[in-house]
Amino acid sequence: MSRILGPNPGLKVVVVVILLFILSPLVVVIISSFGNAAFLYFPPNSYSVRWYHKVFELDGLGDALRTSLLISGVATPVSVVLGTMSALALVRYSFRGKAAILAVLLSPLVVPAIVVGIAMLQCFRSIDALNSFQAMIIAHIAITLPYMVRTVLASLEMEDGAILEAARMLGAGPIQSFLHVTLPAIKSSLFSGAVFVFIISFDNYAISLFLSDASTTTLPIKMLEYIESRTDPAIAALSSLLIVFSVVLLCISTWAVGIKRVARMSGG
Amino acid sequence: MSTGLRNWLNCGFLAGPSVVFMLLAFVGPVALLAASSVLDSKEHLTIAHYWRFFSDPQYLVTLGNSLRLAFYATVVTIILAYPLAYAMARLGPGWRNTILVVTILPLTISVVIRSFGWQILLRNGGPINQSLIALGLTNEPLRLLFSETGVVIGLVHVYLPFMVLPLASAIERIDGKLEEAAMILGASAFRRIIHVIVPLSVPGLAAGATLVFTASISAYVTPALLGGEGVQVMPTMVAQQVLTLLDWSFGSAVSMILTVVSLGILIIHWTITARFTNWSSREGRQK
Image (cartoon, rainbow over all chains, first blue to last red; front, side, top):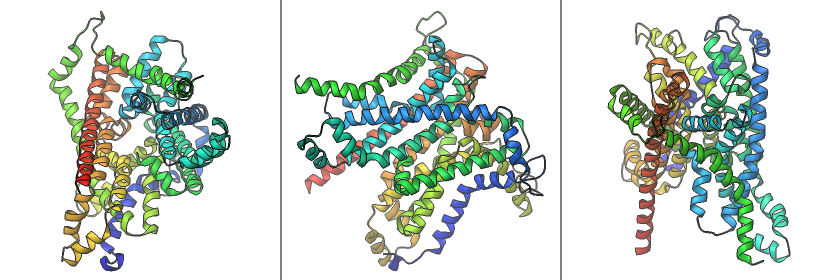
């Protein structure tokens, strides 16, 4: 087909321009981070790496990073386990009200994040039994669980029922057949799901904004404070480090499960 | 133990914790927020908060801003997504993977960082304005940052992947022979796109557009960072009412209006898709 339609140079130029548009804000942040001046310029007049040393002197950065890692680090595995369990129930059993249960589990996907944040703040404040850190973990599980349910459902639906049947006939119990048949079949989905869900939680701003307080400030909230209060390239240096971190994560997941599956995760 | 009971127990064990969790942590709080939007300070039923919203032109302008910016963002996203999706489907695996990686990469980077990058690019002394002035296209810097233009650019950048991916999979399903036929019959590239690719990729287009539009009207960070004080949209208004003015009742009413608008668009999309699917499967049976 490409032989008849021929290569299309016009299309390629347009595609490259759009890809540059997509990369431009990231590239600009990285280049500015190497500026030498005390004020962030683009392009910088002279280059240095001195702002990378300043990153670690940023006020409260360590605490924010620790809070973020802890929240996402707890929310991700909980979400993976709960998501897998409920997807198994939805695929393996037929029962009344299945659609309603699926709707409940996926509901956070259709409500604007800011509304979720306000609703949780109002609720958690009125019960007053949770500290801000616990509230944040609950919120992060609630917003990541739907993605996990959806991912595991999709991969379970592709599973070969005959192998499962064979395992059962050979006397494997439900736990054995899950560990030896189902788990190997869905493990790459679980992995890409976990990476994706970790990123969603780690980058969340709109919901954390409402639930955070002075003692529990997540990284995105702290970063926005810096962006609004500082004019030097230190924050660009910090952003660049996080961009590199994301690139590494993306490379690892692409290498582990293939680019197509990573795309499917984010494609909605 | 009967099988029915055992199935029921297994199911409860597997799905129960998630369902209970979601009801307590999400459905409950949203229901309470909905309730507080129709209660006055003495906890009597009232529509006063909604009335306040719909009777004040200032608030309606905010709703209009949200809808307008989301509409612009969706249109620009469609225009940018088509070439990418088409190239992914038709230019071979090299292009396909490059486009995929570049499209997905920003998704893994905090929207705070991306907006920061746009702030550097769009500000008055920034590279875009400098090049516009150098090219003689404008004498003084255009107000790109803290304007609606900035917000639309930011939204397009954030939600482009949500359009590219469904569109690419829709175009992949279009038989290349149709394009060949159109070409042999003398259709130009432009006519092939308008008469073959676009009509046959409508399902992907509709899915992408719905995602981009609903995500854009719900976006908070992009308008807050790239729109500034001057561009008020529904999510920034909600945050302002609750966090700054501490007006919970009105804030919750605005939240509900935003939710209903966004959910309404999703439901329209689902209804149309369902009808279309039924219709096409009926057609299939008749043959």
